[in-house]
Structures are given as structure tokens and as C-alpha cells.
Length: 151
Ligand code: HEM
Image (cartoon, rainbow, N blue to C red; front, side, top):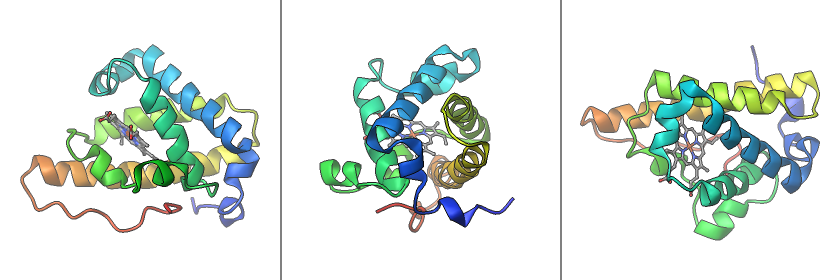
């Protein structure tokens, strides 16, 4: 399915701005903490998810077309760089996406926007997988060019 361009510039607003994005990010990590299937990717994360929850929310604000809060705080928002030291392959990618899918499902937004968001998350998730596997296999890591929406 093609990504619906109608949401390219307003997904952030339709999700409810910073507040709505924070709710989504927290919901995502709540799902990850609860889902037995997600135990492996949960254990890749720090024991205390407070900062990770906050940082994912800051990142998603910019990525969804809102203010570039992650970049303002950390100076860069390089997704590949954040993840390159983990062994993320198809199973980890699909589990992450399943958690996000469940979190999106809980949000009070249109079905079409849910579909858009799910499709959109697949793009960076796959880029992360490719970069991580290049690293795992000792190949030169080519950090992928611009992630859509990255500022
Ligand atoms: C492909 C499956 C993915 C896995 C297994 C995964 C795993 C992780 C892990 C283990 C961390 C903690 C890093 C640390 O504290 O050192 C993390 C942080 C983060 N991830 Fe992912 N991730 C995935 C996909 C994504 C995607 C698709 C996005 C964005 C669209 C994303 C955005 C972030 C952000 C913003 C952080 C916080 C970085 C920080 O604390 O500064 N991740 N992820």
C-alpha cells in the first residue's frame, strides 16, 4: 500500500501534538513491557525506561512533522546510530512493529491515520535492521540517508 501523502505534514497535529505523541510513546513502551513476545527487545533497553520513553516521544515529535525536540536536545537524530550496536534482525524488527501497532490501535485517531502510521514506521524499522546486520556481519556500515520526516 502506498503511503498516504495526506498525512505527511499533519500526522503530528492529528495525534494531538506533543501531548498525543507522548501518550503514544508511553503506550508503546507499556505494550513492550507487557507483551511476552517482546521480552527480548525489552531486555535490550535500559532497566529504567524513563529516559527512553521521553526520548522516543521527543524524536517522534520531529519525525511526525512537529518540532524537532530530540535534535534540539541531543544535536542530532540519527536513528541508525542509536541502534547500530544492537543485533536487530527481522524478528526484533517485527516485534518492535507489533508493539507499535498495538499502541497505535489504542489511540483515539482515524483508522486511515492508524494505517498510515503503521506503514510509516516500517520504513525506519527496516533501515535500522539493515544497518544493524551490516554491523553484525562485519560489513562497512553505511548509515542510511535521510529517514522520512527526520529533521
Ligand atoms: C527495528 C526495531 C527496533 C528495536 C529492536 C529498537 C530497540 C531500541 C533500543 C534497545 C533502544 C535503547 C537504546 C539505548 O538506550 O541505548 C532504543 C531506543 C530508541 N529507539 Fe529504537 N528500536 C527499534 C526501532 C525504532 C524505530 C523504528 C524508531 C523510530 C521511528 C526508534 C526510535 C528510538 C529512539 C528515539 C530511541 C531513544 C534513543 C535515546 O534514548 O536517545 N526505534 N530502541
